[in-house]
Amino acid sequence: MKKPLFLLLTLSLIAAVVISACGSPEQALTKTPKPTKTSKATETATPPLPTNTPDPCAPENIQAEVEKVHKFMREFDDTSLLVQYTPQIQMAPVIQDLQRIRRDAEDFQPPSCLATLQQYQLAHMNTVINTMLFMLSYKGSEEENAVVNQGIALARQQHDQYVLELANVLGLTVVAAPTAAPVEGTP
Image (cartoon, rainbow, N blue to C red):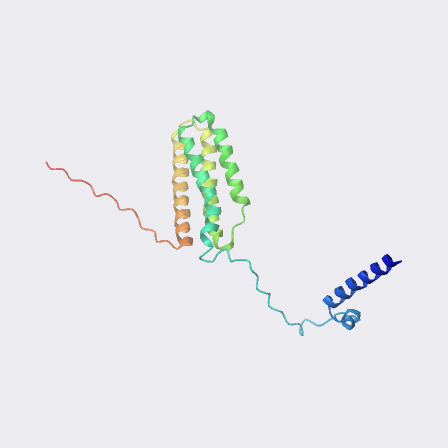
């Protein structure tokens, strides 16, 4: 008989602790009123509560975010260098790898401060891939040479835009490389 009494006292004690932790018994039994419908004119917007989520575009975080975008460009550049040493009939697998990298870069959602960087990156990647696809059917005519040269020049320009934007985002100053002066020989 003592066991059920002990169990009842224990349960009562636990219930008392739980109720006291939630507030007074009056509060526990009081119904909260349902919100009433208000007009838009009387509603006031409450400011969002501050969060502990760091700003990815803040100076102390931007480097890590840039690296997430730039890793695609590094892999793309490394892979595209292989094309120089790949016979034309074996270029398809390299192009497929470049397309995979571009899709990964397209799927990546950078913070808004890196949207322009990603746009330049994707434009460059598309130009390189399109030029290489054109080269798969390349026969060597002058018209084809002009198209390939135009694609290469555009890809270089887009890569330069990407590098300049990368420097801009990181707060770096870009200094143009000095051009070598022609060496004059003695007669």
